[in-house]
Image (tube, rainbow over all chains, first blue to last red; front, side, top):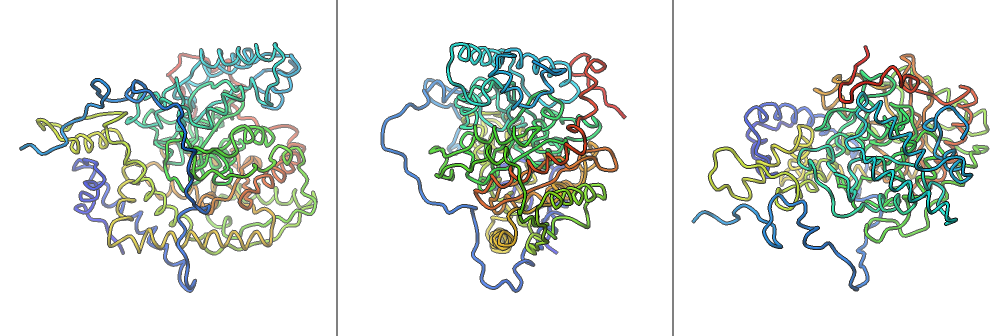
Length: 100
Length: 515
């Protein structure tokens, strides 16, 4: 039976950029293990099915290009209207480089 | 216009009355806004009501009609929109704290088409956070309640749209369906819900949950209303690269036809029986019997891979969720929260603190499950296998549609369940969508319509499924069944709340829960 340990949940939360608290980690590990146990049966459907192509999408995908012509876009004011912080015509963000 | 209340009429009836000059859009819109004011304190179907915007749009349509301008069939009929679709001038929260108060700078294509067709937008309806759930209990702003019994959920994720339409707060609404979020609430509230063929309705401007599964569609009280709304919102959109570039299926004509003579109806063996409530099975079998009497041929079909459809969905969907929701990074829009006790936090730390504070439990569960299923070492066993089984599900549909023109099943395994009943058991909640999920995996269209009341007095949903781009077959068969059922009942199913407006008028925000 597959298991997602508390440490693994913490690692996955780090990858997903969610800072989970101790109580959430305690709760999520057994919950996710239970869900994973239920979905791990998925490969049973493949037994005896032979070669099966993976399907990522219901319809055939092909790239779509729009005409290369000018058209209206959002103004800087519109684009910045929902920003948590902005300065001039720019998004104001926390530091993105290391401290030194 | 004739009839007891403007809000009792279907969209098709309102449309005729508007065209005949028997009422005005302003009058119809005001009637619905009044009803929202008196009942939504208890139901909480809406997260935002835009009375001035709706009335201005209504008056504009009335002016254009008076000037003799040619207008579409639903011009002047008000609509409610699930709060997952971007709307200029109205907040779009997706039921999440992370987007609290956010007002989008552009309209979703569906919303733009509603506006262009002259439908006043009453407001934005409640949903499980980012459409993840089957009860609306995962909304960060509190659950919606079922007009049939306010101690029960209206289903989800689109419980707000379904409750609004069932309780006559809106004649029609828009929902989205990733694994059943239009059809299951339809079943639980006694309304009609349609998930069109994948690519039949543009996804542009709809906040993405699982991009290969998401599809917007109509939430209504009649099959014809659903077809009329489907026609307004459907069709090719160059802004969505998965939008089907072909003429949309003739859904309105099919809904007006409603003839099942000679139609081959396939009962899906795997979508029923054990695990389905007795009253749900009984109403389903009676409906199949009515279709047979009306001249349809009923065959049993088997889709063996559907047994793993739920498992497949709970790998594919969280994987796509984990990728799609990465956009909520606290930088360009939405919430920005800072970690406790960190001086000069980095962007990454702010992002992690924001996503912890802004996302609810179910969203976190799915993001982490998806991150796991996509991580190296597990990818082949989980996401890879799930994508292969998805092919098998599509193949089973292809084979079944060789034997039958439409497939049928109960929409949901149970009637409306009590608030809180499944909240602490994610797997029990996930089972609500066991019969609706296969259609999303394969992209085929599905429709749910009310089939009567179960032994508990609550509505039961009947699901129809059709091949890709044959949405018209759903409307044809559903219209026939609807007519047969209405004849038998002597009128539409009406939730008890609808007749109780006077007794329920009270201060908004102090819902009174009936036992």
